[in-house]
Image 1 (cartoon, one colour):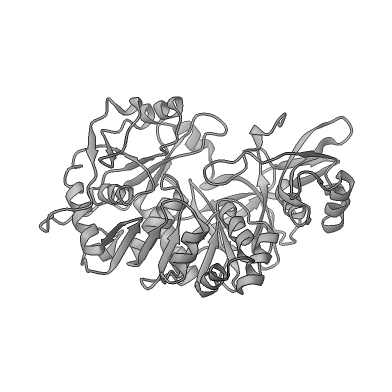
Image 2 (image 1 turned 60 degrees about the horizontal axis):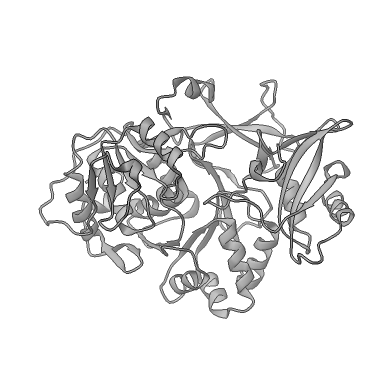
Length: 482
């Protein structure tokens, strides 16, 4: 049917997709998506009400088969942001489950209900240009209105194939996850990834430790995708749940993404299961850039080496390219390769500004180790702290704080200081809220692991850190943060 999904061209009774009680074989998926694809012909773009259901997967695959760009909509998006996305992307249809209640902002767009069945005689999909847009995924909008990222079919295929090479991902794998389906991690990697391989995906609908244990254990799952919040909850449950430990030990691959997994959780999971959680690095505009290969020793903040086809460099503020592989010199990550997006929808100026002679400016700051591995230290806009003449990445301080037994969660920011330029501020959620670790103890802990100039000068205690749907800390929502 489509070069993106070879297994749909010769559909079989092999399991393809399971979400809750809804299960589809490749033959059933081909019929349901193929039937819906025929109803999308002629649309410029279609919106998908991206609930964690099998219908969302069918809707996106149908759009891809039809050669129509899909715009996944987060069901929790607020009224103003939804209006911006709809005005910017101008979808001709909205695809949703028959029982989904859509907000008033979608009332003017014709609705197509997504069914999980279809006739046997659906016509094959016509070939589609690899450079055609597959998805329009909107950024989180942390620095202004969300931008629509145009992801081509070429970019999706290249990124998924590079991951398959790095992780030996095949049709025999059964992927388990509970990630949102309006984002690259859950939708592209977590749904399109296994279907491109001809394997199986089992989405939990909502995350639960019991669901992970069930699907990886007796369910025969071989891979687990998650974010640090999920792995933290798994690590907390391991001591009291032998079934969970056995399930994780039996998995072939455990992958964490979207934010750094704290070293303490790495160590707890490895000690209980004998399995190392691997990390990878990507973003909406680039899909996947690097990945840790299975079997390596976990190193906090390290996200592996560039994937096949991806070129990566670190660039100084003056534009010079860093050649050092010393694990200390900080530069902005820039990448180029077939995984890159085609541009921002309706934003030619923003697209041009995002590139430096063909290299995409990620805005992420990193160092490179002697083996070429990338260690992220934070975002240029929010995580690069210039203190006392040093450039310091917030990420490495956060990892050091998380290594303290009294710290449950940690975030680091900078704030103006008349002497240092900026001082390092640690936001800490203690393990015991009634007996938080002393500020001096935390400062000495960081100084001992890293260097004295990287110690926090101020510690502020919170009950919880503000996070988005993917578990990323929203630093600008911290009280008084710049």
